Image (cartoon, rainbow, N blue to C red; front, side):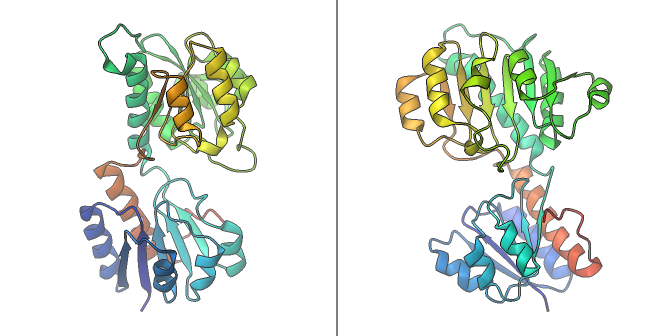
Length: 306
């Protein structure tokens, strides 16, 4: 009997767990749950005989993967999978999947929550600005980008998209402006949402030069990964431009410095919470469970990332 382990420091919602368990057990597989573990040794012991593993932001490094001698598949419940050691998984013949699209609307809604907080000065009673008519740039036009586009158009914003997966023809069909690379996007967008993965091409991509290119009244929102921004450059831009604001649910390491030096112009959530909604929690969890069942029963590797 295949054993499916769900190991999460940050637990799924109880409803999500119930539905995931039902999917796994209905397929005839064994269910195991490890939540809120405080020591990596607990995870290493739990994965020892697991055939499948579902995680959220938990670190699946080489030590974890090598401790799982029976492991055949890891599913990251969410879009980003940089917490999984892809190279070790490949060497071990372990399939790695993500669940793209399941958290997308939640992340998009959070983006606009952060935007509204900043443009309305933290709702402190002073006059702010409106989103209507502003240029909104989407960097990384995938599942989240599509939801951002829908919401932005509802606010009456002019949308620009920039992504390796977006062609000028697709942009025209959707009624958005096509940006031919980061320079084009940053120089033409007052407000930008970052929705790109963290990899060797994107780490440190958002630098002083790009941020300084943004038009007056610039507002940058990052719900992706903190590593894509050069933190020293961000501090320098905030110092040089009083009109520049930054919001993120992936707070930089120099968060305390930025909050102290630039009050009202930076905004950070308590933790990464783009996917922290009941709906996204259930969607990502049940998708992960279903993908594991499909993999074992049909050999389905639709969302394989390695």
